[in-house]
Image 1 (spheres, rainbow, N blue to C red):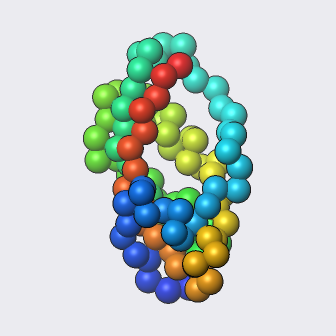
Image 2: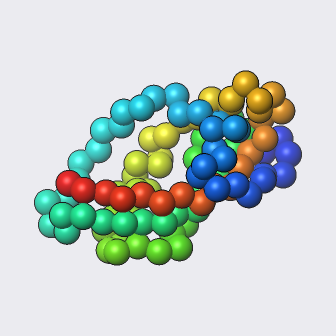
Amino acid sequence: MLKQPAMKISASELSRYWLPVSDSYQFEIDESLPAKGYVEARYLIDSEGRVHKVTFTSMTDPQWGEVVREMLAQYQYTPSAYNTKLIPVWVSNEFTLTK
């Protein structure tokens, strides 16, 4: 749900708008994945703090992209003290992953 147009921000700006509800998430990682991976993703955090529309701009392996997609599906955000208008954001973020 978007209560207003989403802003484009970088990952370093995210805490000005939204904060993660939890700092731990659980999911299965396929043993066939390479030991390390890198994914650049872009996603929308809506006015209710939910993640939508995950796309990838770069990745070392498509399987790691699916891990990031699954991880982001579990994320829930709460507005920061500065985000009283519940501004939705498009975030560009980088993930370095190991299993």
